[in-house]
Amino acid sequence: MEELTKNQRVKQVRQKLNLTQSKFAKRIAISTSYLAGMELGDKKVNDRTVKLIGMEFNVDEHWLKTGEGDAMFRDDTDLRVTKAVSLFKSLTPVQQRCALDILNALADMNTFEE
Image (tube, rainbow, N blue to C red; front, side, top):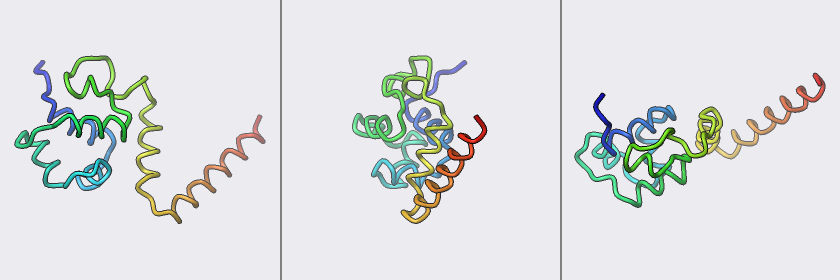
């Protein structure tokens, strides 16, 4: 099996998180066109970008740079949690408050079941 390039791994992370190029680029403070160029292999994935992707999405930076390692995400983080945080950050403040209210209500319901 052919090993992915660093550029292809960036695209793989974005797709795994189910984010558009625009949303992914915004979260790591680069332009959408630069991200598209990276994914196509036309633009370099520099150390700053690797660091930002690692910090923002909990991606293992060594894996992103080299393809080595067991997991895309650090500490075997549950992908559902990473996706939930990513989605939450993309919401407006009003939507975030609503989401927290819903989560609190679900947590309260869970305590009644025990």
